[in-house]
Image (tube, rainbow over all chains, first blue to last red; front, side, top):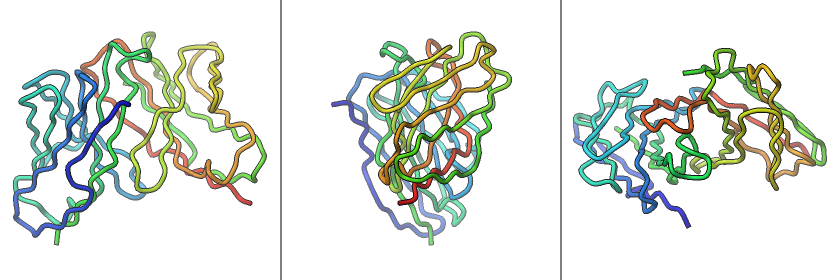
Length: 116
Length: 112
């Protein structure tokens, strides 16, 4: 079964800490995405990657960076966490080779981050 | 990329058919329309995808008019377990390097 695994389900961090959110997919997908979800705002795209070592900014990249050193792993980094980054973070992957193509995303269960 | 607009919320009674419409006026020729369902504390999951006319699977139907500027997700005989947020997404399925942006979704509440 297709799977996207996010390393931490719940995290609590302090303002100014560096935070790593890890995402691993086992489907050999080319594309990987990081979204954040806040009440009333839906899903907002932070960064995405269509290949190893490639990254593209989404709609709200400020305060975040990403790393994709291997095809199956896409990391989201908060260099200096702030309280307004308290949110649910969702990782997803997709492939142009699937039956439905690139815009059918498989999501992880999410990582709920609280920054105090 | 085509921007999507959906109603913020809808209520329906159990057993009824529910139709959720999404507007995407600037859809491009190569764009497909994909719908997702999200339950609380979970990531969205794929429901259905279409390009034109009608698509049906075991969960839902998707109706797309000839001009493709809107689409309607139809859920037959809903139950309490269909209470969720539904998102439509428009994009090119053959183009991996694409910023896939979701709208705010439609919160569907099923009433017993």
